[in-house]
Image (cartoon, rainbow, N blue to C red; front, side, top):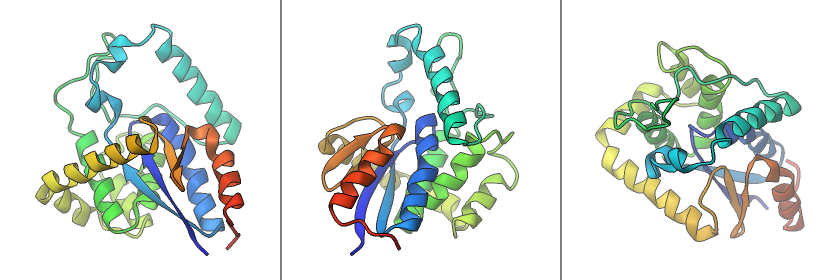
Length: 215
């Protein structure tokens, strides 16, 4: 029996990156299909989120994400460029966002093809793994190829079908909130949400209770 789960995920979230390789490995080694459902990050959904946070929030988050990467041996570096255009001094989010809409829409297009987990992992390794100018040249084309997809096809669909894709992405966010959470990364299995990169073993434990078996 193959189990199923949904992984709600954002291209801008470092913790989404820090969990996805381990979830992809779990899906490869065990009978569980993980459907990655991309959502827009808080910077898009709640542009004033960062301005309202405690002054220590950013420095602590930076420290924590680096040590999580070191602990798990995951290559990690600041995104160059950031998927979100933001003033780092004022934390103000720019109204012009050329990267995150493209990424999230092609991620949803990959989900339509059942390849979103693979594509998001390959793309995230570029964005958060230290690649310079991940948005230029053949970087994303290579990520799509490694996921069994064609970037030109995804990009064309993201432009042609942008409104429908955004409707699906909004539905992903609604489904996440119905499941009992609002942030990413959140894995939802059998109606139960597991929020954060530090809940993977607990999610696996729950799956094992429900009959998860090695492939």
